[in-house]
Image 1 (cartoon, helix red, strand yellow):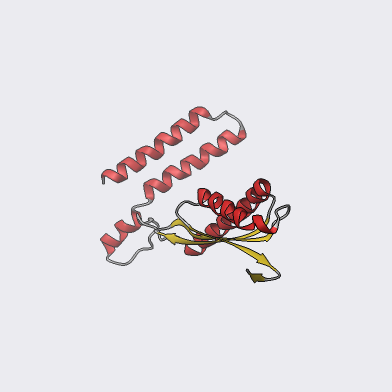
Image 2: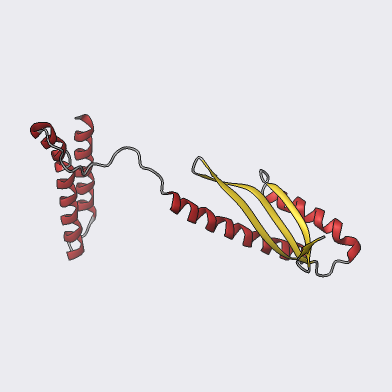
Length: 166
């Protein structure tokens, strides 16, 4: 009962503040009307539960439970988009800092609904101005730079030439 009273009081308080702050134009009157409907909805929200108690039949429930299940498809989409953005960011940083053409792949996982990068693979496709004897040195620099960006992830840097690892 206490939660119900607090909910109704909060809705009325929000409506009163909105009425004070809104101008007396058509938009203000429209929003004021919407706030009144909002207050009525909050007031009448427990009626289906009351009907169930009185009549003993299952009434349609409009109340939202306290816990909601996360949308796994949405989380997968958002985390995949974040991984793509991070891949592009790594590629841009390595091209700018080292002058390399790379292809990055980020392997991520969802741990307790949080985005966690497990592995970062960087394939160097073109070393640009660096000669053959400098490749190992450049690979180590790239690996340390990517490890700075993703401290918790496993980092793998390989040279990619003609479609095969070397």
